[in-house]
Figure (cartoon, rainbow, N blue to C red):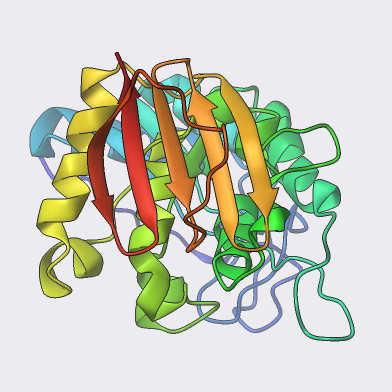
Amino acid sequence: MLIRHNWDVSYICSTDVQFKGTGNPDTGEDWKGAPDIDHTNPKVQQELSDWMNWLKTEVGFVGWRLDMVVGYAPRFTKIYVEKTSPDFAVGELYRGVELGSDGKPLANQDAHRETLVNWVNDAGGVVTTFDFTTKMILGAAVEGELWRMKDANGKPPGMIGIMPSNAVTFVDNHDTGSQKLWPFPSDKVMLGYVYILTHPGHPTIFYDHYIEWGLMEPIKKLIAIRKRNGITATSSVNILAAEGDLYMAKIDDKIIVKIGPKLDLGNLLPSNAVVATDGQDYAVWEIK
């Protein structure tokens, strides 16, 4: 039976003047397009959980994408995930990286990724979040600044460098791609997929790229390499080079990935490395 909610203004936060709410104050940020629901209300928590469980049992949903999670305190995400036990849950915490006077991302984005990690921890560690840090740094790096792809500790500079198990990596989505809010450089999109599909985290593929842009076949090759070599969300990364025109890394001692136009790799490539796939400014080798 379909669950319908008939909520009055008492279910809306009192700080939401636009929708004349009379509930408790908002625990997160406002968004003008919809009422700010009072998640401190036990009835809201129960009825939303009932609806989500109906989506699981009656419709067949197996996981959640939680939109604009800054709209309410992360402790409520923990409640909803625990009450519904999805196979997978990811929250969208969209924050722009800090820019320098030249309009480019600053080299150090530790604070940006720590915001993502803190949200995951405050939500009880039971949920993942989109790795906007990796997406934004990578989008700048492929424009001849691949030195950006290593932090001060020699690790990947995004969330995957400190909490890969809870990071969902992506090149673009409906906001950044379709609505052009910080889109990935269109002529470098495959370089983005080469990175996320060979590195730790939970990589995702944008429908537009896979179907409408005709990138299905090269992306499928990368997916096959990932599966064949058992690359997971927590795989190890050994960065071999991070220069303006070259990024190379060894993943789990099983594959080596190269991004960038530089052809002279010196002694970075072992003799037992066999090309698994390659394309414009990228290559992936399997170590035999």
